[in-house]
Every structure is written in structure tokens, then in C-alpha cells.
Length: 200
Image (cartoon, rainbow, N blue to C red; front, side, top):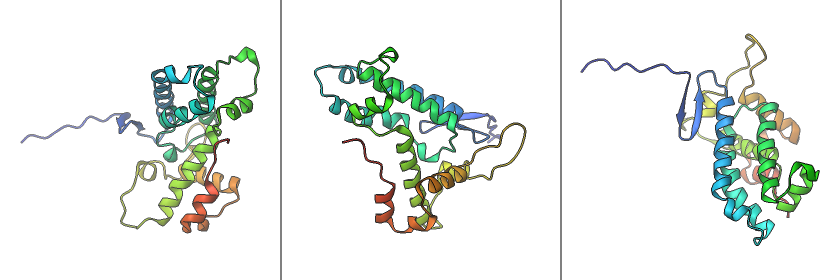
């Protein structure tokens, strides 16, 4: 058999995620927002039905739209500007679901309380720390995931700004929550401490 030539590409799609050669996630974030909107439109008959309770809409939104929007969020070496883009898309979907527009000037916190969903940034932190707990307790022979062989890189200074890594994001999350890495060894305690409860 002749040699098989494999084309070198800057990015490719794998299991619903956009993998970029340099470990960037901008295109994956854009893709997640696009897929989130697709899920929103496909569920809009339920989400925009005024006869359905807002709390029930919030549960549907969480299971469909939020799940698509945050797919593999635990692996992202995410930056503040990227978080902001996700938050903007998220709140716009929730506003439309509640029949609000910007001119109504209703605070985002009030809208989220009405729908009974926690902020997307808090939910991303939860899923990231949950995965960190799995990584800390796993066997040394366990297979690695994308976030470990691509995003677990040291920050290197090149041209432009400092590149964010998954390790840096995790350290910031631990500091924000007042946690230490050793806490992740106790699974039950770790789960209870990182859990972000949607508004009741």
C-alpha cells in the first residue's frame, strides 16, 4: 500500500468541539454559542409559550440550551472576555424566553431569579472544579482528555498577550472559592462544596 498523506490543519471538529492547533478556544466558544441558539430556536415553542410556568421553562432551558452552551466547558482555558460573550448570549436567550427586551431595563439578576437558573459563570466554575476533582483522584493509567493533552500547558510569553492555560483557570477558581487542591481527595465533601444550586 502507498503512503497515506494526512493533511495538516489549523483546526478540526471532534465530538462536537472545535480543536485548534495552538490550544485556543475562540472558535469553540463561537461554535457553542451558535449551537446554543440552535437549541433555543428548536425549543422556542416551549420556551416562549406564555401558558407554561416560567420555572418549568427554566428547567427546560437548563437541560437543553445550557447543556449545549456549556458542552465541555470543564476543559476550556477560558478568559474573561470569552466568559462575557457566553454570558451575553445566555441572558439574551433568557430575556426572550421571559418576553423581555433591553428597553425594559430589568436587571439580569431579577430575570435569572424569575427563571430560577444560576449564572452561567458559576455553573462553568462548578463543572470545571468537578472535573478537576476527577483528575486528582483518577489512576495514573487512566486515559487523558482534551483539556489535559492540549490545555494543560504552561503559560508562555510570545507575541501579544499571555496565553491562558487550564491550570491557571483552575488555580483562580480555587482561590476564588477559598479551596485547596487537597480538598478534592474527599469526593463527597468536594461535591457538596463546589455545588452551585439554581435559584429556588
